[in-house]
Image (cartoon, rainbow, N blue to C red; front, side, top):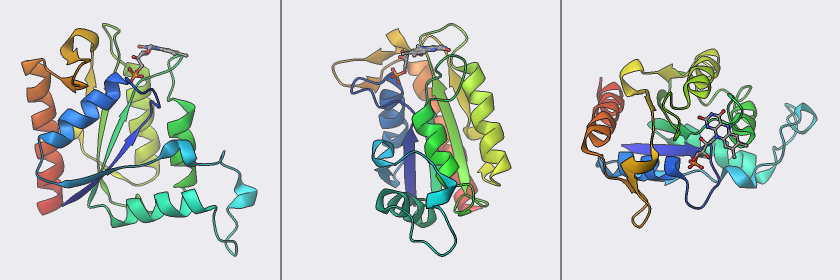
Amino acid sequence: MKILALNGSLRARSSNGAVLRSALALTDAASTVADLAALPHFNPDLDGVDDAPPAPVAALRRAVAEADAVLVVSPEYAHGVPGVLKNALDWLVSSAEFLDKPTAVLTASPSPTGAAYAHEQLRETLRMMSADVLPDACRNLTAIGPKTDPATATVTDPATLQELRTAMAALRDARSA
Ligand SMILES: Cc1cc2nc3c(=O)[nH]c(=O)nc-3n(C[C@H](O)[C@H](O)[C@H](O)COP(=O)(O)O)c2cc1C
């Protein structure tokens, strides 16, 4: 099984990066993390049917197409989806690689309510794109700070690790169903 991961945070010490790393470590899947920073701003003028898309866009589309499942992790900025992640999703709307793709959404924030707004927005956008968003593979992780170890950039809280284990099992089961 191949999982492609998209992280809405570009921060080197991203807590969502820790969530991503720990979630993937709980699977035996091969995994790749997409380079969202390389993407140009979405512009429909660059996305014509007869034109080759910009190279980073072509690479992202290929990576989604070749993945058996997609793991989306993200913080929220100003109660919304970070621009870098929304930009990536916008490039994937018309090309349809997400169609029926088993997809997990994990959001994390230091806030006691987590990244609840971005979580719902991401699930709605992905559903609109006809991704197979798996409810059992979606988690909004609250108060994430002390649940991670900055030295290893991984999740250390046992209850959170169990949530990640459950989510990744749902992703694997959808793939083998
Ligand atoms: C511009 C900006 C806006 C933010 N807005 C929110 C917000 O609306 N809700 C929230 O829970 N946290 C918000 N935060 C705090 C982030 O959740 C926090 O920085 C988190 O660690 C970012 O995720 P990361 O560690 O994966 O980079 C914001 C942070 C920044 C820099």
